[in-house]
Length: 180
Image (cartoon, rainbow, N blue to C red; front, side, top):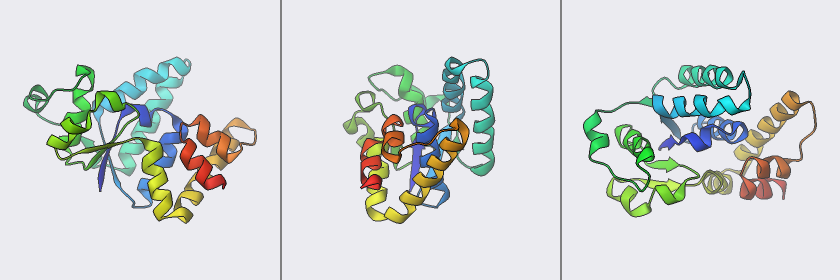
């Protein structure tokens, strides 16, 4: 299954790490575009003077791990598409160009299901997507989330409660399921 990751699910570090570790386990093939990665780098500026550089470094590592993940398209594709927010048309174009099955986004209102269905796509929020994978493969998700928590603790120098970390990462259903 090919899954296009929108900027809003790549930018939060913990969410991105969980998604990419699940992809690395072979559950899905991640896709993104150069523009999505550029949006991430520009948004990371608000983290401070090194935020953009950090995002660009992490994007380079992602590109090295998944060299086929970056998709591009002819301008004519984007020109024929419409979404409620014209600024998101590039995401839909990337999904179509990459032959994605799904777009993972937090931005439901700007990706109406009926418009996506016309292109053979579905939209899913990351918490629902990961919770569904947890239902099918609880051991995998428990391991992945444990690794992400360990890394968060290493980087922050403080312990993290699993449920609290997942809630902060906007993955509350997954956190509740794993902590149960």
